[in-house]
Length: 157
Ligand SMILES: Cc1cc2nc3c(=O)[nH]c(=O)nc-3n(C[C@H](O)[C@H](O)[C@H](O)COP(=O)(O)O)c2cc1C
Figure 1 (cartoon, helix red, strand yellow):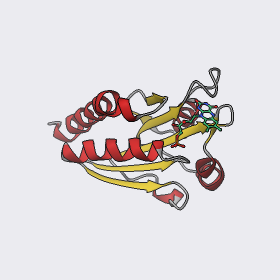
Figure 2 (figure 1 turned 30 degrees about the vertical axis):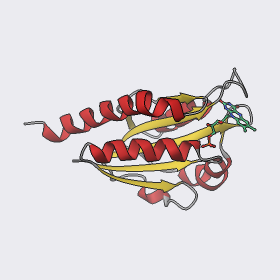
Figure 3 (figure 1 turned 90 degrees about the vertical axis):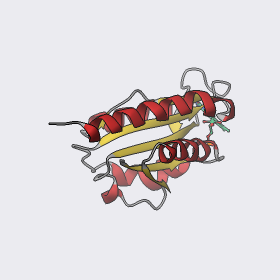
Figure 4 (figure 1 turned 180 degrees about the horizontal axis):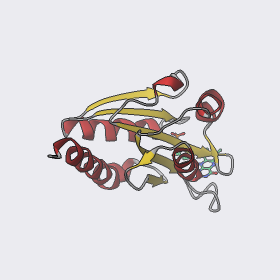
């Protein structure tokens, strides 16, 4: 069993829905999951979890959604994620921008890499409405994460 913290930024609710779905999957697989909106999440609590999942949608030609960009992003620039296992969920829709499709996922990936975090799995990148991708892509992604977390906690030294 692992302690998983999910912190998300969402404007229209799609990212929230994906986080809640992934969180439920992980709970069903025996993990303890906390899900918080980014706006009021304390930056000094980004570390100390078995897994941190950062999630955000994309707006305005490849920018992070506003809650994440304005109320959270400036506060997390000095955080050191050394030793923190991380995973990323990015959302977007190519009908709004093909050049910067799901750019939020790439921005968050870069953030983790440049702040010494440990990305343990390729990011979950959701293009267009997440609804039809929950039971397939999102569930598979959560299962792979869970396997990795279990492998870690079951390791015999
Ligand atoms: C005004 C507007 C601008 C958008 N710009 C982009 C964009 O640049 N790139 C992208 O991939 N998706 C873009 N999107 C799509 C959203 O990221 C997508 O609908 C996402 O699922 C919204 O998630 P949320 O409901 O959690 O905010 C845009 C959507 C809107 C309404």
